[in-house]
Image (cartoon, rainbow, N blue to C red; front, side, top):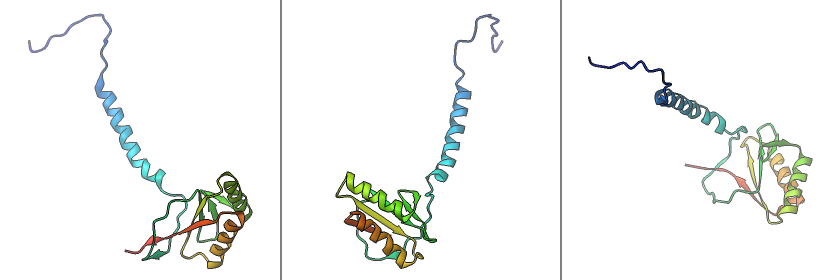
Length: 135
């Protein structure tokens, strides 16, 4: 006969690898599909474009100004007073800290100037304006 059949009453002591590989591949596909959704930034800002831009190191305080005027500090929605407190706390911990300001290109100029003023009065002396490089 081509094959033999053993009728032992012993339990199977080997691991069946095929279902393990199937489950692992399904989990890999699920993670590959969901990762881009997780990595998408929650604050969509259309940055202004400029041809001349310098590389600057990311600041300890990332301030984002949305199109509707909402202010975000390190990803958290804050008021102007909370931004000032957050900046002052950062200066107390690290006096040479830097802020990176990202503003939507449709944000009113006065709002950006107001945020810069809040950051400077809190004690942060170095800040950078985030832009997109023109192609």
